[in-house]
Amino acid sequence: MAEAAKWYVVHTYSGYENTVKATIEKTVQSRQLQEQIQVVSIPMETVTEITETGASKTYDRKLYPGYVFIKMVYSDDTWHVIRNVRGVAGFVGASSNDPAPLSEDEVYQMGVEKREIVINYQVGDTVRILDGPLSSFTGTVEAIDVDKNQVSVVVSMFGRETSVDFELDQIEVVSQ
Image (cartoon, rainbow, N blue to C red; front, side):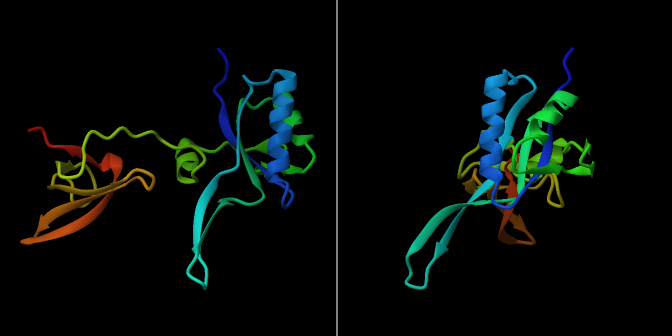
């Protein structure tokens, strides 16, 4: 049985991230290495700046300048393919010859890969909080922001209505 692919981080020379990504993808195509090197990623975030004149400017910014994330099955062959790309300084790990794979939690926390969460509630639904200090409390969904993995729930605490933010998978619909 083939070994499962894991995420590795490659350190690149400053400004070479896009060149390294394109070169690796081209090499994977030409050498038919899609099974071994599955994904090459440069995590980005969309930033909106408001200029002094009040105009807004939106652009993409690298989350980790100088690094490229690669989901691959680590072997001598894949190590050589990646290591010999122009602009690659080495793998991140104890040594450049012994790269450390990222754990699944690290991958999600760093924004390299997104978990797909299916939500079965909408604004106005009554929901139960599943974990955290308010677990087992119920409230009403006030707003949902899927991009930020956040849902606002109005909860009644100490006789007051309070809006509390949760991650999308921290609540569930109360069955009617």
